[in-house]
Image (cartoon, rainbow, N blue to C red; front, top):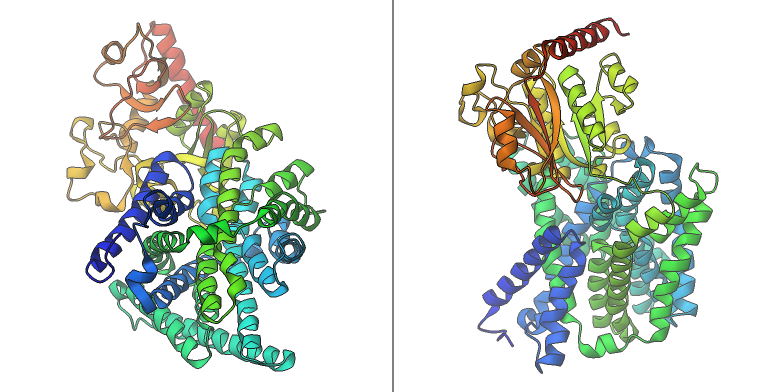
Length: 635
């Protein structure tokens, strides 16, 4: 066991290191990170205590009286980060089903979960209401990986995504309200005075959060804060807001920081995205640390206190309460029975629920509520059960209900032009699904006539976030003639898809042989653009010129007999390999630093000079000319 007095730096290193390592491993294994973070804490705490005779990590002894305020500050930042993602303008543009899930499904689920926890779990009414609020919400950090795993259609993906984003802070706020009510009654206040004190405390917290958000937004708009200091100032302001609210009215800090985040999110700040990404990075480390600490703090006795009635209550909430609430809330919303069933059964509980439960549990135990000892293990049980269950069930359930988009991963092509349409046609023949996006209905005409899925609109708009649903796509390639626009699209979608999955054409317009965008000091910096598509770094002008010269896309499958070396030799030195589809259906765009996969069964798509008889080449050139005329005259 780590000595608390002498090895505090080692304790902190183990907590942050194991938490971040669990997140990285979850990314590699494509599983929800919350499961591995909890698992790391349990291994270091109660599991080690049972198997080794003593825990490897004892946060209570290591941090002493500082543990609770440290967890409280971390949870405050996590709740602010949740609030800053909730933009009410974006919610107004979503479907009726999303609004029903927020307005009706949450209160219905909360009420039914409270009943289940009281009558099945045997908990007191106040604890049932507090835990019920936490177990009703889903978390976007666990929902989004599941959406990619199941390949869901846009409507279902949009409902699940926005439910998690919107209800996450609302559910935590509801739980904090109940906690405030419990706190007031513990102070000996009557029901009336407790309600008055609760209302006063909530008003103080909400007012302070609102004022903090208004002042910060005003300072940013007036240019009083330089850009490099904006994100650190937000972090400091969150901590000050939380501490000041708690000083004015005990246990109101979480209300204040959640309202603070909501105000900032809806203030139309130009730098909001940069602040969100900075906060996501800080929150990621805090989430990892909090989960390891909370899980390691659970004792074998606390875990053993969970009885059959607690397991039954969790099962009822996951399998009965949520499906019923979703079904009743979405009646007449346009969702089919299969879609409502799927949404009802897929509801993984996430980071905010577990972190808030751990913090409130410690507070209630310190105030003398011994029955609150079951709060943290019960919520952890629900998180484990829902995440594991949904993780294993999401793909089979979607297939059984006929809701899964079967086949390989989908590619998003931004920019409709003859070259990109030729690529889309080749991908369609190779059974790789694509979506072509463009702001011109005329340019999309050929794509629509060819049967491709199209998106008409600006991919950088707020509307595209819920209509286009980026989580459906494995990769993006921006192929418009405007290099700066391509770079902007890649930077915008990189946080969602990953920097290694956003590509654009080279911005170099010189000879093909010398196109090296990463080495050109006059080009857009490689840190502010996507990866360069095509290993030789071809630009739009060169590709368009070759297209009109009769170059075309060709698909070749590697076999045991026909290897990559033979394919490269047959293709010639001037052929451009664009994409590889592996035997498992995954796709890889081939950038200027990519290695071409050589496994048998891999399908390679290349852009190369036409070979064949003079008549065949003439026919291809005529086809290109016809396409150009169609693009010019289509309205």
